[in-house]
Image (cartoon, rainbow, N blue to C red; front, side, top):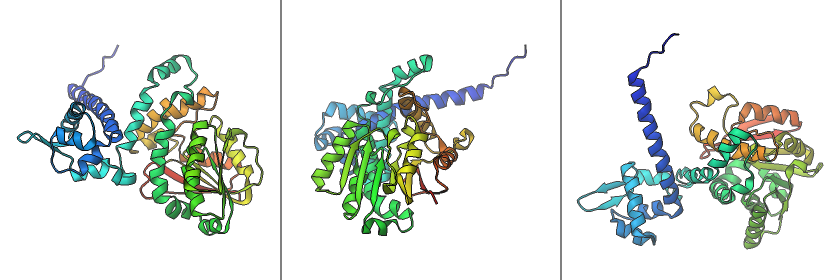
Length: 357
């Protein structure tokens, strides 16, 4: 039997990388906490300050803030002067970690790590026995997705995303019928409805929590041209009703996405447009190796998107279905023309513009 030669330098290099993985995973958890309690935002507004001053400004417990700062300093996120016992968040780091950074805020996505970790034990069981973890096992998911999408939709939905479709803003101003599939908390619908009062908007989702949140926001904003329906979009059963249908990162989560896409095609009028926003990736693994955040996206697929579908005896399409598969499934659903665009500030998504003519 041939023996494999072991490269000790490679062992050392890989061990170093794994130590980095452990440290970075720990940093992700602490970054998620820092985002949630607004420590990055507070520190960005302060000059160099002690842990006591930072805790006071953030209205937090100093002992916890001090330990959190230890993780931030040893990770190179926060700078520390031992002579004065003062900490500072460099402006260059704040540009990536605060709410003021908008879509460039990379602290917000770290909240997915603890969310996904909550189901780790159940996923281990799925590896051994099959099946999936149901949507109900992710109690914070709606809120996190709403926070994430609101940043992009507030900044770009009206002026950058809808304008990807030639002539669409003018049609919306004149008045058309619009649906959003998997609308979640409904913020995208409410943003569009407020901007285009002559158009009529309907949001569909199977989450009662999401629909209630959407209706509440519409009431608070005084929006009268948006409605929200609790519905499984696999059985949409609507024909020639809408001029525009949108789906924001919702199709890959569906139990039976091919059925959903076919239903969308039927629900569109002959000159209608389907604007599908979904993960920017390839269907071929080798083409995703250099993709930023690819490991995180495959992890999110395993611990959420794929398993939620499988829990419903679905197809388990997964987050990383990729552009090639998306194009083929759109064609199979009846869309004869598909363009793919990108939007500045959105590193995660492709924007598919699909029509039946």
